[in-house]
Amino acid sequence: MAECLESVLGQKYIDKEILLIDDGSTDNSRRISEKYAERNECIQLLCQENKGAALARQCGLEVCIGEYVVFVDADDYLADSNVLGHLVEIMEEGNADIVCGDYSRLWNGKLLPAKSVNSFSHYSPETEEFRFCGFFSCGNLSYVWAKMYRKSFLQKKGIHFCEFRYSEDKLFNISCYLKEAKYAFLTMPTYVHRKNEHSVSYQYRKDSVETWIGIAKEIHTLLLEEKKEKQDNLVGYSLVFAAAFDAIMNENASEGIYSSVKELFKHYRQDDFAGDWFVKMSQFKRVRKVPSFLWRLMIGGFSLCMRWRFYDLLVLGMRMMVKMRIDESLSDTGKRE
Image: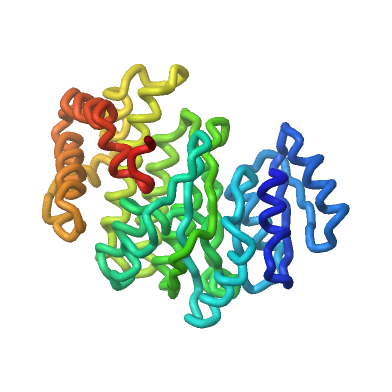
């Protein structure tokens, strides 16, 4: 956590307000936060009791007084001392609501640059290519980190964090997109995201299926409210990626509540809402605009197997992907050599 705070305090951009949200931490984070708050007038410590990352971020949004908002997780840090200045400059130049920067992942001591925003920023935001690459295959748009938000935009559009205890950032950012945020992009390293196997992101979650289906339903509701039904593949992609990711997590978790990956797939398929979407996504015309033949094949094939309940074939395919490290090759950082 100290590295995170030093990276923020060390920013050359002077006019900054730092809010530390302690969500009932059980390590020494609270003590570190108190020491930094005592020494730095720009730091304010706020405490809540185990409400989750989503409500911690929402707490910060409601308290902050600045126009520009940046989220930094305690395990992570800003890439250099000029990040905030560059983000503000791009925000002001483009009169943007959200600025997205490049980032890296720190895996086992190795810094791996993720796919650049250049991989999708050249597409028009109204296109299927922009949505798929930004939120799924590249994924940059899904995370709240490595970004700067205009607070007045969030307030005007009534955008807030939901109460889901994980993956809340994807729903938050899809809300921004569907409410027509204006984007700008910064093609330089802005953020380093550290792999922490004890964090929520890397732990098996017993309510994962219910949570992801709940998020997909919220996206569906947003589409109807904003009259963006033609963009409803956002729901289908979310469920396909969620089921595939959960399968990998469940396979590696001894405490998984499902006796097998097959049972997990059944759980997804038996839900009426999710089941209907797997049927829809099995129609290959749904994915014809996905800018990669391999992705089109995998999404269509996965959905087809779910539609016809070919669970054994799906399990075999998933295990082959992991064994051949195809899942790594398709990730935002590629194979982790």
